[in-house]
Amino acid sequence: MRTTALQVRRFRLRRQHLADRDGEGPVAIARRLLGVQAQVPSAAAQAVASRTATGRADDGTVDAALAAGTLVRTWSARGTLHLLAADQAPALLALLAAARTWDKGSWQREFATAEQMRALEAAVVEVLADGAVLTREELTAALVAHSGHTDLSAALGSGWGAVLKPLAWQGLLCHGPPTGTRVTFTSPRTAVRDWPGLPDPDDAARTVVPAFLAAHGPATPTAFDAWLLRGGTPKARLRRWFADLVADGTLTEVTVDGGTRHARTADLDDLDGAGPVDRRLLGPFDPYVLGAGTADPDLVPPGHRREVSRAAGWIAPVVVDDGRVVATWSADDGRLAVTPFEDPVAVPEAERATWSRVLGRELTAPA
Image (tube, rainbow, N blue to C red; front, side, top):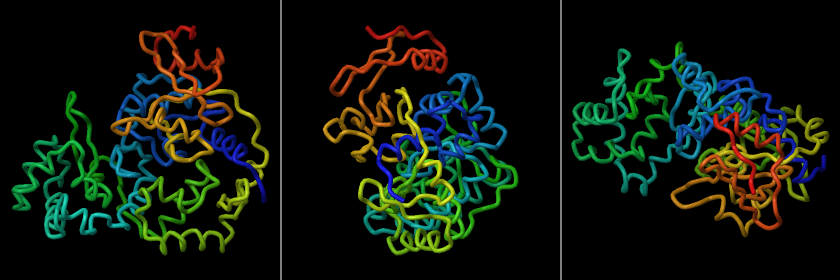
């Protein structure tokens, strides 16, 4: 099958609930997208609400799903915090854990030795047993005491969570309910009823790879791994995951503007028939942008990447025209302000109304 980058963008917009705003709530949306980045909680709430017909960022549906254990907040793809559907989280974490990026000498020299990590893995199971929910300070103190590694106190207490991420990827901890403005940590077995533990990574790949392509495809194995782990998956394993899924008919190779990518075989008709999508406003850190990555020239014109991917890892709110980023936007003081890359960009009235609803305040039209 031959198709174009334009058809790919249209397909992704529809599969990611951006064409019709037909998402059915935070759990279903997180499951479809394989997670919603939640490093900035308000951005995650906006990403969810903007994919529904009536939701607002402050409507409490994300918090309710977290409290019910159907959604879990933990470090996931690319080492960033995500909202994950609880029934999908084990498979995603299994792929991240299988890469064991913390076994690399460069990582251990900067953060913690192999011996220290083994001690922390044993300690975290003990300190988070019996439904414990601990603040960062409490968790740090408990892990230091149980592991005996007092020299890890600073690393464990860091807001970047570098030493905690491998523990999260192994399904040993996740975020718990916040205490005011302070984050807490607990075991996934406490946060999620009937937590099954992590599956075999090869079995997990059989569900995660097709799920990724169902929302973010067609894509190459390299693009999948860039989204998952910034290229950290062993290449032989990555190739085998895709080859096995092609061999059994789950995936099909397609040609996109002359390059080879993979799509779910079940999606070929939808990919071929995806129609135009009007301009859309996307919030900061939107999964549509993060799925492809700002380095993708089909998504972001290379000369304008810095306007989208900014200092300190900030991903700006953008305007997409038939799926391609053409501008950034802001809504300071209730006024919608659009900064186009080149030609003037008009925002449809329906989009202004959608984001007035999402943000819970009336946005005036740009001058």
